Length: 405
Image (cartoon, rainbow, N blue to C red; front, top):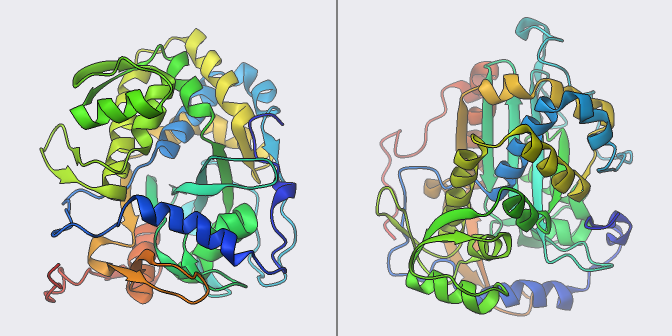
């Protein structure tokens, strides 16, 4: 399908990866910026959590729910990939339930194969894939898990930092998003599951090629730019005309803005300054917030235009019937309060430049406290459903001293 990755090009998980190729991809990222090199890494009291994937997913739910008469036709245009049996797990991927199918007391919360699982919570991993090339699955530049929590009636968002240094099942220690390069969405899912003990029910791959089309279908987007941001957009986006101050950007310009990490980002509301990947996440959140505001004024015609632009760029193991269930429940889910976190949490990781032999180059990564982040994440997702998670607190909440940066 045009515009979507061909999953047949995914490397064989049983084979040995080309470590030089892996090293080259990761080194190219490191050469552009050191993720923790500033004298003081900026922190925010607000979680740095939302990516442009959330915007696409939210729009998808709203437009399919709003255009129910067209849902079957629209949803037939995405690429459905059926799961292959996994011999390493007995976790049952039950069909995604409707909000009306099950009462909270009927759903089980239990650990299966070491993974926290709740029948009343559906975890969907959104993978924003950029720079896709034939025979190369690309890299998951955005990793966002959307959790439909029917037990507590909440919509929860978990943003996974892609530079997190973790064990890739069947391979070695790499950055988290290397799981997608080595084995596509199935290995990316397994990597998060095995490191953080959370059961991920489904995934959606979103080709970022769709992003400019979404913006252009809305008639552009108005953003405020710094002089550095305007200059790099004019140089790299393929279009010129951006200036310091308020701009009405095209889809291509907005897409490049969302990818900038070599310049600081200043929050327009709080004045806080963010650098590198933290700045990029904030830019993506800024775009998302603006898109949501713009979407409130979208008429039915534009909704259908957006639907036709987005759906062909999706690859998912969500079946058409399940996608239709999500569409029918869209308005209910979007009425839930939204809660968001970042993993690893700021208190539960530190930055380091390593020199792994299997990489053969300096490797700037985030070193997580796996045990603490596992408790933190699953407490956020399941709250009081598991006794050992119910009372979890961050080190600062426990009164423990934090390392000074």
